[in-house]
Length: 270
Image (cartoon, rainbow, N blue to C red; front, side, top):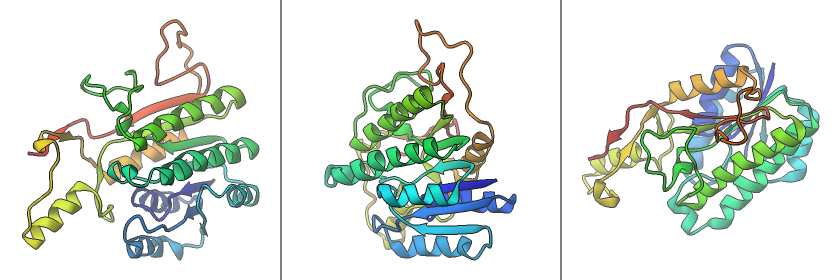
């Protein structure tokens, strides 16, 4: 099987590529290696997988319409794992257009590539941040996610809506995965565990927000990858019990699903 993985030099992307290669899949990687954080970390991740004979890499931004159309046409992937995105919540306050370009324009390019090239299943990264103003605990796929509180979350919610539209219009199987605070080897340096550890190492105060009154469902990278691969192999199907009079946000009459991928054990930061 040939799998296209966007964001293949990213934290989750690299680990997914390694798992796919280990089981014998051909993998097409796409990443623009941007400088949102230290590019040398992305280069080092890429070096771990670049030498594998079943891995083919394209240094391309997903928002590049023509380049992505060419990759889909040339590579003809069977399935797609879409992880490329402009990440970060606070960064969106200063750089909003980066989120529109990567997360919305980029996603429509992925959907169009899948639609026109008979992709059997699109699995894409949503985010736990879509729950926004929802205070019902624990978070469930059956809850409403109509009140995002960051532009990043709004783009991820938009991705879910766009995916459903393509599932409905073109019968494209799509599955969105709402990741919860992923950590582990080769992680992003802008995440809490790395920021806290670096502050401790330097002997400087740790920055916390909301007076530290926060909980996070920390999820180890291996568990995230296991979820991604299992979902990839199980193509989304219509929910035969879907009730349009009482619609379930996590499924549809179309081949569309959304799942939370987390540890299920929220931990207070302080």
